[in-house]
Length: 145
Length: 395
Image (cartoon, rainbow over all chains, first blue to last red; front, side, top):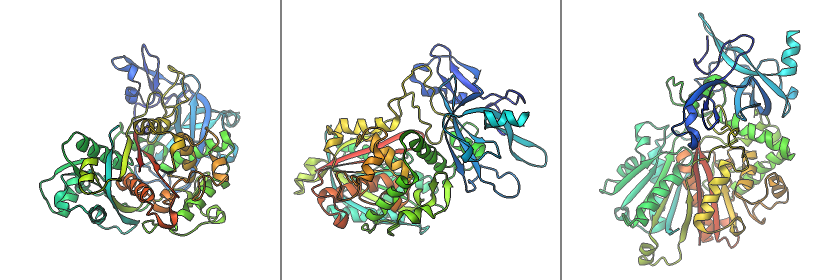
């Protein structure tokens, strides 16, 4: 199940972030609930839209130390992770996310094409809690072959 | 913009003691009153910068401080704007003074901080960006600092050595500051040997969380003159602006930037606008500055500020640093106090501490960290979620 409902779809092949789009103005938002930030949208209808699945890597970093709650450490021991900020192709919107495990910063470079995948954030006895993550397109698609 | 006078400043040294935050605020307030030669019973208004980490007394900081100093029936306001709280509290005091509600006011901020990363408030809140970024991404504050640092490397060719050099510079300044928490002079190797926290930033390059308190006694220029103070340090401009849509930079604590699909302009960012407003109010330009106190949440972040406050064109900040322009003795010293690198961050006190440093500099009382002949100083920072904070002081 989604770690938080309403932010992304769980389509196994083509997962997407769920954003908002101002009907007449055309600006995009993620999450949709933050649609207030464009003053020209005051009174505009905000439609729910699925955002682009791919984009260019805007920047990236690592988390070498365990973050505090509400981050849930998956597994028994904290493992460092990589975080990416990806500029969505169509919306010109930069979105954060963890990078799929197994990708190091040495494999990343600015402007690289990234795509959205669904991965496990953490698990308990009953469920896997799912989240979106970013994967380098080249590596991800190679992995499928 | 009409100006007000800063009659006195005071600080409780920064550190990590875990004591009641009100103690730090009271110490700072007493020092500021003494520095101003103003009695507590003369203060007509207290503007408190709140803490969200010290329980209910932190949310009503003005009454907490006033109570600890002794209730006199003065007027109170308590405000919170994250790291911008101090500038916001000063702006409220200025408004009270300039509107004639009071003649003399005390501005105080203090905090006692837990160890480690700042974390969101307890509870599960799916609409709170601060909660979401921790839960879904594990994005701590250093995550954002590191994303900006990496962009500098990619876009402008800045190096890890440049970032380390910022910390080295600020540590050299901090050695001379009795209120700083870290007074060790670091070299580039010390930084390179400290643990990586958020690539490319290492532990010594990331601002710590600190305890501390800072206070200002401010008044109308007329009231200052009535006390025989004819040439006080003056608050000439304060900026507390919000971002302007669309902001193409992904700001703390959001999961996404604004979209500039509909507007198509990504040239001016939030942080440029913070400085612009302060310059406009004070009728000064970057060329008029003698020094600046900027919010070096990370070593690399200090370089961003050089560009946002107009010390150089975008991308040229490391050149200024490498030339020694921003060191004490250079053309435009930045963070003569030692900055956050030497202090760590005591959120509601920090913007006030920046103003304390400006006052000492403009009075020529900064000792070995004195910027010669300083007449105009600027401080700048921003509060998470989009609170601008900049103060220009002149003398």
